[in-house]
Image (cartoon, rainbow, N blue to C red; front, top):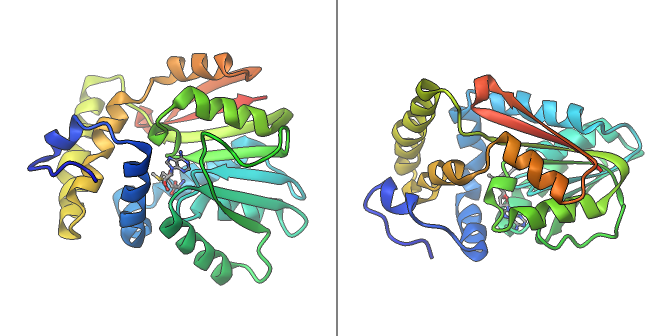
Length: 245
Ligand SMILES: C[S@@+](CC[C@H](N)C(=O)[O-])C[C@H]1O[C@@H](n2cnc3c(N)ncnc32)[C@H](O)[C@@H]1O
């Protein structure tokens, strides 16, 4: 269980284990989509569509969305690959996957989607299985980032691309202060109203710990990717790591 917190700071110092992260995302599953939508003013959808575009996914292909959560990005990928393709959405939180499955049933008559309960650090797929991959707000949550990148590299076909969207710690002082202010005074109190204070207080420290763009690129190259480039987006509040196997 997450350590009881009187304020976000006590959570800020907590590094969660994989099991605690999985339990956290299971607990917030019922409010997760609404929160994302409200707190990003709907912009997360634009950024996720960019991830689909930058992954290079095309109709008829076999694609993977790692840490798919409630399925938003996997559903976008499914629209891109169409009825002749297939998308695997993988996450280790069953409550998130249950919501993803419901959404797929509502949105598709015959969904080209497979939901897999599994670990991003030990992907249950063959080597070189996928034509493209995406991940949104997942990499930052992995307990072993190089291992997650190595696994992603392993399952992609040579020349295939992955687009990885996540928060970024801004480099300008005022944006850094804005991001911290927004997370701590808007996101956490909004979460508090749903009894989810501790769960959402976890975002800010995880962003602080997350490597900056150049470090992400270095880690990806060390993990075996042939090319890696990191693009700051939304003024540097978010970033997209684009990798080629
Ligand atoms: C912030 S959510 C992002 C969900 C979704 N991609 C989105 O953008 O809405 C992070 C997700 O990563 C999943 N996750 C974290 N570590 C994981 C791991 N090692 N294996 C599989 N899923 C993991 C969590 O269960 C959670 O659903």
